[in-house]
Image 1 (cartoon, rainbow, N blue to C red):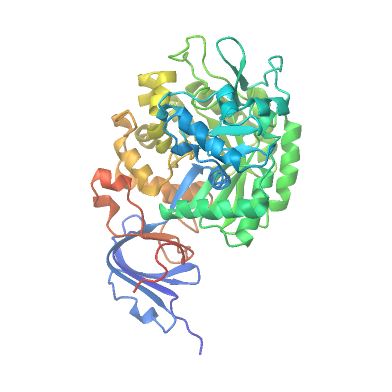
Image 2: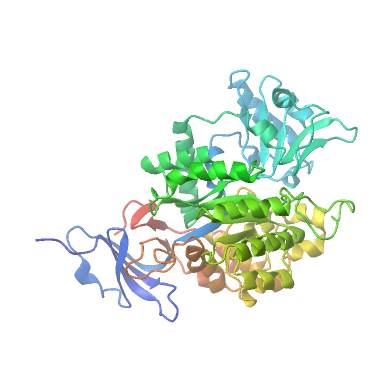
Length: 540
């Protein structure tokens, strides 16, 4: 006789389904990878229990959907898993010593790379190291020091390999750094990074897969069940496919294939040809979401309407000319893919909305959510209203603001820092917004992000408290809203029958935690499709 019982039954103090108007449930049953039943009675689903049912009897626990991080960089986290951990350094000598120690164990001539999740203001010297200082760590290896996704520092060996001299033309949308005397200092920003990064060999695939195993497990341990990775090059997607096949992913992945380094529509068409093979071989664990463009720089080069506080002659930079970007975006949507575009400063936000408006006008009938704004950092009321009118979803990243507020204040001044990521304004104006971390610039974590959005706390104190939102709103940005952005609203985001059993279990209800306790709260269990990806292997 066929066993029609549940594979998994969870009894808890509260199962928050996030279905509007539905009170907390007390029991949830899973069969295969789907939720099949819920009950307000902790023993209301006992008829589903058979000899093969795993029962988690957790009378004090709270169950929530697994969270999404809708703008992060799992690839960076995975590929950094084996890199020099410079994020642990407190000053430049310690930073250099970590590189020096790695050099001792690395054959001469091989590349040395560092982790990316560090900030120079956390170093005692409050600045980045220079090429000359990196030379002190090793002059027998090329060294690539990355900070986030927009900044590199390299040593003299790497500059020589790349053929970069004081006469090298600066790529449009990039910066080749110089010191006060005009000499190269090893700094490469935005479109200049490719001059060196194209030379760095990829790790062997087995090592890359191991890095993704480590990194995706770290995301899952904080309650993140799905990542929208916003910088995936074609070769990286091939590695993700291999990691999926090897069972190495502890999060679902929605990949944005990067157009960075491409400067023409012809190059974008070539990228789209490569992506065609991935259109129909997706599954709920791994799929291509669309294409990622960048319109302006990051912390140091976001395009602003008003000059920088630290340099009244500088207002950031654009990495695409608007007409060229409009043409490239059109090429993508006409091939049936979605587009996410980085726009950080208010000038970039305005220009991107101009570009998107043109694309929408010339391509009527595009599906809702085809064009997305990534960050929208400095978006005032007028720009927010315009995004709402055009139907442009926006991803915001409070952890990015938390970790970089001091850096941003130096560049943009306190008023603009306080205005970044105005979640309250976006919601009040009816915007479609979701939340994420922008790791490695911001620290990922489900409740860390919720805590930040509800408090507006940063490393330099509360910034823009009028932009704080409520706990339930913040959770929705990571669950219901996030699933809609990913096109998964019929699969994920709520805990209801027929949807994937993607859920998190907490030993206390995060809604009722003191604020500081919520910041560092992690789930005891994270399950995806009913499969445990974080937590104890068995629970009675």
